[in-house]
Each structure stands twice: as C-alpha cells, then as structure tokens.
Amino acid sequence: MNKLVFIHNNRPVTDSLTVSEVFGKEHARVMRDIRDLGCSEEFRLGNFADSHYENLQGRKMPKIIMTEQGFTLLAMGYTGPRAMEFKEQYISEFHRMREELNSNKVVALDERKVRMELLKTALEHEERLDLVEDKIQLIEKKVDEQITLDHGEQREMQKAIARRVYELETDPAARRELFSQIHREIKDRWAVGSYRDVRRTELKEVIRYINAWIPKRVA
Image (tube, rainbow, N blue to C red; front, side, top):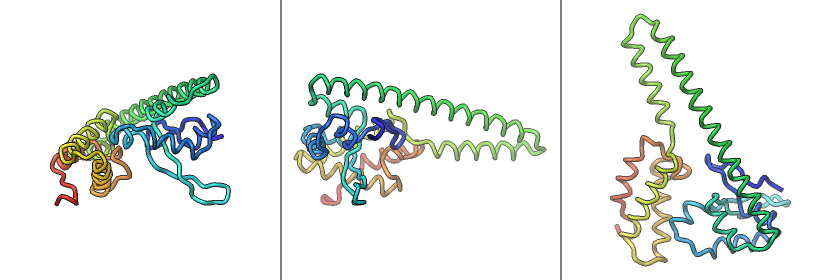
C-alpha cells in the first residue's frame, strides 16, 4: 500500500487509489464518489486534480489527487467502525505531514538567511561598496522571484477567478468550461504547471489579467 499522505506541489495530499486500498473499495467506485460529490466548481478545482498511475500491465490509468479538504468531504460519506478508524489514521497523517512540511520551510528560510548574511559580510570587504550593494540586491531579487504563492495568496487568486466567472456566466453548466479555460490560460501565459506555481511577484499582474479576462467564446 502506498503512503496514506504524500507531498505534491508543496502540499500534503492523498489520491483515489490509496483511498480505495485503505477503505477496501473498488477504485472505480471511489472515482465515481468524488465526481458525484456535488461540490462547487471552485472547490473541485482547488482540491481535486486528475492524474494517472501505471497498472501491472504498464498502462496509464486515471486517478484523482485530493487535498486534505477534498479527502474530508469525500470521507464524510464513508461510515462504520472500520471507516472511522481509517479516517483517524488519515487525520493523523495529514497533521504529521503538515508539521514536517512547515518544519522544512522554516529550515529553508533559516538557511537562506544565513547564506545572505555570510554573503553580505564577505562582500562588505570589497573596496567598491556600491558594487557590493548592487550584487546583494540582485541576489535578493532573484531569490524573491523564485518564491511562489502562499496559501492565502492562492485563495485570493481563486476568489478573483470565481468572481470573474460568475460575472460572465449565469449558467452553472457553462461556468465549468470557463473555470477550466481561465485556469488553462493562466498556466499557459505564465508558463506554470498550476496556478499555485505563479510567483509571488507576479500576483498583482495575474489578478489584473483575471479582472479583465474575456473567454474566447465571447470575444
């Protein structure tokens, strides 16, 4: 059996294949349960993602990756003593993985601070202090440009997307295509694998783009 929870795009997640193994359900049934949840399109896009795995014959088969919130919504429908035991295991594992992830972030930030201080100290001994400052600013800019959105900034972008889609379309069925289209265009325009990978320095630009976005079918 795979690990109950693993890291994907810097977030603790699980997947439909693991859930099916843990709860003793057919994978197709778990996939169907996810699709029949009836959650909003915004919640679905933020907490469920289509993926795949290779079966024993080497064929690519579909699966769904889900966040802790996505798993919680799905597991509400699974009842019984054994199901409760599995839910508790998942809750503990999600908590452990979050703690581990947060610990790694703190260590990374501390290491970055130490490197910057050492570099600054070394550069201060150079004769041309104006050149030293330029180098430090350039390094800091490069570091900042690599930082992606935190959870609150991701939510800010998702709310802007939802607000724009709901402004443009009243038909719930048509909104689904607009959500997919705007997410696809953001990924293509900023060359990222997911909206979560947008750099923090580009957030304002992306929000402006979303607020002025017109779907291709309307243009």
